[in-house]
Length: 391
Image (cartoon, rainbow, N blue to C red; front, side):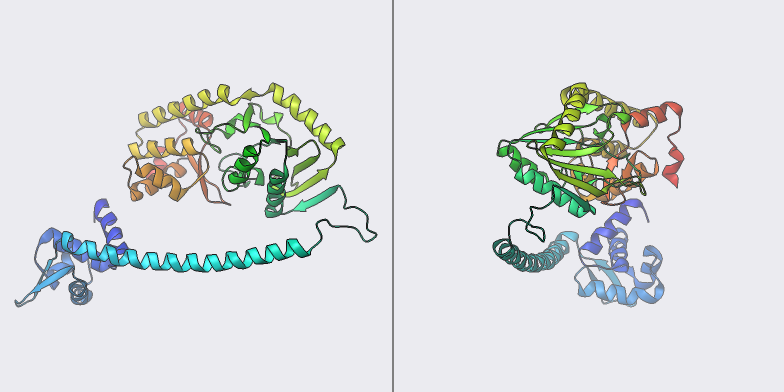
């Protein structure tokens, strides 16, 4: 069965046919009138199944039979049968979605009631056994708790928010630290803070463009970048000159995102602020870094075309570079606008991953391109293994 036929079989299955029914319908469309015996050979269907498959196709309105001996079958025109089955399957999906939405609404209402009751009845601040104020330094463990502390810091910021971080290497086993989740799931809190007038400055390594934040990254927050990996030795947030969230490196996994410190101290904040300002002065603004990143991506695309990669592969690479770390369905939807169908897009993604040109983050399953500078170097050295396309 050809590649296009495989795709059409999958599409017919979405409309309610099973595998053998889909193959049988395509065979009838291609060959015209067929007996059950002929169908088995034409559609690679076990002979023991051909009669019930054809009867089922007839019942579903995709085929009609002739009053001959032996009985022959012909396909009903797609224009007459696809529309009703599309409407039927669409209705089923909508009904499932409505049920999920209703259940989610009930769960959210219950969650909201619990939250509002607790915020009303519990004291607003924790106090020690002797009634002393809570400590000014807290140890936070687990990614979710660090992310919650970060979101709280963003929500409570009134004047200024500073962030310094660096991305892991694309394709490494080290997961995203919580500071990068801001760019994917919690960006609404950032936008809300900006609308309140909070001034933000974010500092990172230049290689986060395009792999992590993409080429369409914009300001605000105001962004600057350092080139040398050794320039960024810690990751932290500073808020309003008094709150520090320090993301610590786990000595066991060598990754970030499992342990953090929260410090409410003007003295500690001033130390981190001085360090941040010195690094900020040495860093390059986004407008100086972005053109070079875009140029590198285009150099990679030219190199991939010269190596013989398919047009869809290059389009997938360029789209991924544009949007940074992205879920596969979002990336596939984006390239569909460029007339790359779902099956071709999925195949291109797997091919790019096999070639080491794209990576799938093991924790969040997000897709991102390899650092373009590394790809250029690999192309020059001839180490991009095109043989991986066939494996």
